[in-house]
Length: 87
Image 1 (spheres, rainbow, N blue to C red):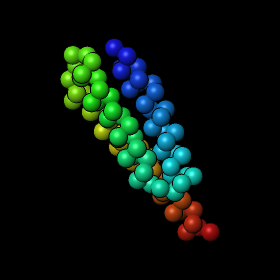
Image 2: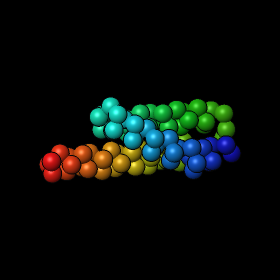
Image 3: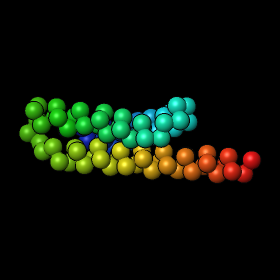
């Protein structure tokens, strides 16, 4: 199935890239997890119509990567906040 390599190779790279981009450039800390969640839930709706697979595992991956994106955003927010307090 083609969705397994997508969620194991492409999704982590996409999650890190979008999280860093939204946090550093746009200073929107919650925008990245929302984008990741909705973007990875598109296959959750489409794939069960094409193949005979369940949607729960695909939804679980989307939730997992949204939480990872949220953690990355909060870590970067903490670093920026700490940097402003030092100077």
